[in-house]
Image (tube, rainbow, N blue to C red):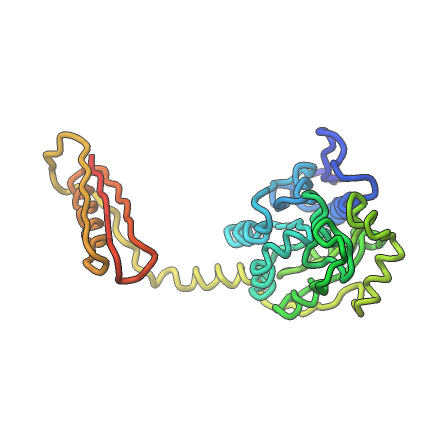
Length: 321
């Protein structure tokens, strides 16, 4: 394969970000990092969700997955679990990180080998500049016009407390941002880069926030820039597959259903089994459906029961044909 000089495809036009938006610098740095590593496009997936940065994946000549707001970490983990050899790069905003907070905690805890890049501009930029979990105290947004009364979440500190193996805080202005991202992608386990940047549409104009002020914010909260944690430990998906393969031979595979009997069914027939919870309605329906399949029939089963356990009704519908 010839050397790749860029992974960005601008055939559909320029990137859609506002002039001066930090997302543009972040994506340019990501491209340089991928060029440095010469990642196989067929083995690389960029995962995004809703938000300005969620527009990013279509500009890269790699595989991509785009989904619901705050859920890009879950999709990334699923991809990595299904194929541990993939390079999974996840792009999220601070808003999405807050929405998917439990996913954020657990990917760090489990040490699943994805690279998480957070475009942290202190607000929801796509939907009108509402405050997010990282909005600074006293920050002006469309939902905090009097000034934010909350303290901002330290995303790096949260990831570290959850067990994050490789955590870095930086800004979109750093010249070594491509190298930082390349190092993050090269980590065997979970890696995260919290990229502080400017939202030139909403947050920066409302708060007169410029490059110097961004650095003042970092120092004002007692935060450090750079690599904060580098504690390698076994990666989750690799350990999972090792355990599965080691234990796989011990399991008993249920034999397939091969027709052994004739049947006299002339037309599609539906049968409903009903009773109270705890009367084995579902199990009886399954036995009936399997009996139909042993007789050369097609069978479907649909169950209905309340969310409570051992109380209420139990209903099963079996259709054979």
